[in-house]
Amino acid sequence: MRFPFHRRLTPAFSLFLLAAVTASAQVSGGSGGSAVPFLIIPPNARSGGMGEVGTGISKDINATFYNVGGLAYQKHTQVSLTYSKWLPQFNADLHYSYLNGATYVEDLNGTINGHLIFLDLGEFQQTFETGQQGAKFRSLEFAIGAGYSSMVGEDVGVGVQARYIQSNLSSVTVGNEKPGIGRSVAFDIGALWTPKTDWGMPEDFLNIGGNFANIGPKIHYVDVTQADPLPTTLRLGLGLHLLEDEFNDLTFAIDMTKLLVNRPSIDEVDPVPKSLFTAWGNGKGVEWSMGMEYWYEQLVALRAGYFTETTAGGNRRFFTFGAGLRYDMYGFDFSYINTIEEAHPLANTLRFTFVVDFDYGTK
Image (tube, rainbow, N blue to C red; front, side):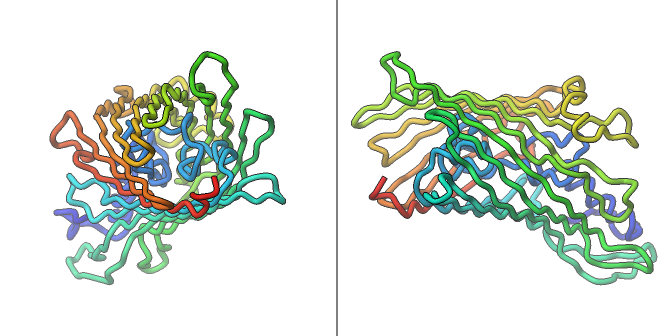
């Protein structure tokens, strides 16, 4: 990422500009004035191919992001890694990775997980207002967390997880000015309900999920009085397992996501928990996703979906497509975003996910 007028910027304003570009451009959803929006980039290529759904269908390693309650249904060990070159239309030097793992622990009667989110923002050149160049520095953001999920009944899974967040926008200093590094912590809580039905459909036909994510204190870089909120979100999802036989498997899902951040003015931010209620009136950060997934013999998957959001939230609309392959304990998924606008920053975004299921033969 390079700014054509960067030579005329003071170091302090360069840091501000970098933060603004990061906040407005990184995310798959409108940030609504929140910081570290890399936390709400949907990481998984399976869900990415289905329009970014996942809250009501994730019962495996994907649940780490979409609904930690879904991990309660996993009774084995999985590891996955997702990679994407983010915002390819900007020709930005942004690289996004999401590493996570989960395993069932019988003594704990539940599943534990760990995850690492990493966004490389690229290398920057410090330039003073005189035109003199200073040090080069690399900007990056990451979060590391862990969680626990368990069944609280025959058909309800719940989970909670926490993460440490660090955003290194600038590591250089000028005089008494602090480096542009922000830190915070956050936690998620989620639940997934799969009621038993007798409707002549697959046993897990109906799935209803909900997840609160990134609940935590505000984050600041240089001035604590200019702290910004985390991108606290609510996800609600419905999954319908429509068909399952010897050769075919078909699933439909729909998600609603709401960013629970509210700024009554540019200098005012509603704190949590107040924002959990006041954010509903601003119309920002409201997203709808829907998608379908078809498996043939649990070997090859085809996926398609649609994503839309409110005008106040950014008015983005795009179709997604994806595919998956499974062989023995290994799985590979990829997804592709096809935007209606040719110049959309997410156009032609590809995500790749590699999954290893260590207990494939014993499930």
